[in-house]
Every structure is written in structure tokens, then in C-alpha cells.
Length: 372
Image (tube, rainbow, N blue to C red; front, side, top):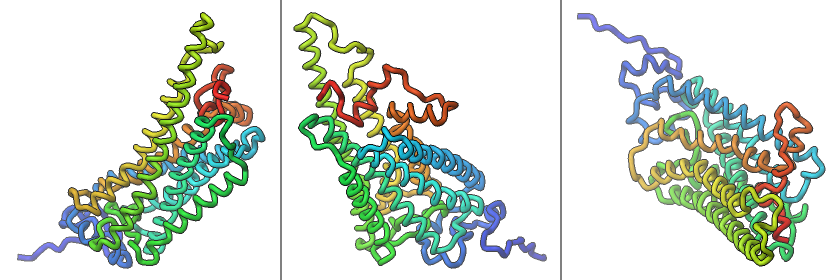
């Protein structure tokens, strides 16, 4: 009996529709020069369904476009509006710049790989992807952290606090970029390495490395890029809310002595409630953005459970989504920014009402008038 020989394409980027019929793995479509970077763990998984590649490519493309436009607009408006060119806002511009750089580098790379349904750009671009991802991600994280610390210093210390200067802001920004660039280059010199993740669409640190020397990089990385910033952000907003609550209590006691309901002309919502909401939103969004990466890396390092190629994609998706809503949290919520946005782009209609000029956003980006 003649055996029917299946047709297998010669091109290394094999058609996934064909691969399902021949017990292929997610690794089989990887280019030859990338094989040495693939951990043996991934050989047990079949290729991802082509539908997922299409969905992921579409989502990342949309996030990339929206994030790039939003952050570019933030940079333009903050830099072109004199009233917004303050030392504290330099940190917001730095945050927008790092997010914009991520959208312009990593997002197109993932879209290309989603089209080919594997890592199609070779080892050099894998290293570059890992470096740019590390630099921009960590710069965003630490920019948000320094913004929180600046708000903490301004609000909790009031008139006794030393306001940030242009020089102080520039030094902070230089410190952030120096540390993030240095840390992201370390894997090129042997402490861990950049490898394709299980989805074969993105590259990151090797969290399946068997030696503890390489694993230690991931653990230290988590301390620097996750636990320390998260602690500082929670610490800052906790004391911000605590300070404003204490002042609100004093004002209510004073109002009671004066037999008036409130010392404010506009008391639609108490300051502590507004601050509590923005603090909760900021911390929650930060947690949602970066926790998936931590979970994926720690599962690999400590071999806690089995993870699939599809599972590894969520770290990239949530991190890139963070670059989309950062302009909303740190810029559009700023009343002066919304006023400038309306003047330059009236069709967007984001101007605040007079009452909004005393909103939480202004309270946590400058010294509140009632705390001075």
C-alpha cells in the first residue's frame, strides 16, 4: 500500500493550519537562529490557534495607536503651554515620553510577529525588544513613583515642604533613565538573558532558567521594578489621604464652632473622598498593569504551576494598556491640562467647568489652597 506523504512547506514560518494535523509544537515554526534561545519547556505545547494571533495583533495595534496618539498629545500640550511647564509636570512629560517610546518600538514588533505567528525578527531584535521593553516599562514605573513621592512631599508638608525645582526634576529624570538603561543592559553581559516568551510574539527575561544565578536576576528585578515602587506609591497616597482627612476634620470642627455647615462655597464632595478615589484608582491601575508580568515570571522561577503560551501574552497586553490610560490618569484629569487641550483641540471638548478647577487632580499635583 502506498503511503500518502503530507505536504509540508519548506519555509520556516510554517502554516499553523497545516501544523495542527501533524502534532507540531509551538517551537516548530521558530526560525533556526532562535532555537538556542527557546527553553525546552515550550516543546510540550501545540501551536496557538491562528485566531489568537489575529486577536492579539489587532488588540496590540489598537493599543499602540491610541497610546502613541495620547502620549504624544500629552507631551505636546505640556511643552507648548507655559502654565504647565512646571518642575512637577516634567515627571508627567517623562512618563508620557517613555510610554510613547514603548508604543513606537514594542507594539509594532508584536504586530509583525502576530502576522507571522512566531518570532520572525531574529536574535538581535529579541535583545532590542527586551531592552526597550525594560527601559520604557521601568521608566514609566519609576516616573509614576516619583510623581507620587512629589505629591506626598507637597501635600503632607505643606508650606514647610521644599518645592521641587527644575534642577531637581531633571536630576530625578536622569537618575531614572540611568538606572533603567543600565539594568536593562545587564542580561547582555550574562546575568540572565532575553528569550522569546511562550507565545513567541515577545521577548523577555528567561524565567525558566535552571541556575539560581539567572533566577536571582528575576527576583532582584521584581524587587526594583515592582515591590519597591508599589510600596512607595501606596505609602505616598496613604499619607496624602491621611493628611487631607485630618485637615478636613479640623475644618468641620471650625465650621461647627461658627454654626455653619461648611467653610467652603462648593462642598459637593469632600476633599478626602476625592483624594481617596484618585489614590485608589492610581494604585489599582498600577497593580493591574504590572502584576501579570510578576505572576508569570515568578511562576517560571519557582515552578509553581504549568503555564501555557497563551497565558504568557497577558503580561504584554496589560503593560501596554497601562500606556493608554496613563495620559488619562496623569494628564487629562489635570484641570489646567484639560483647559489647554480644549484651546488647542476644541473638538475634543475636555475643558473643565469652574467647579472642577478645585478637583482632586489639582489637589494632588499642587499644594491645596485649604492646606496652606
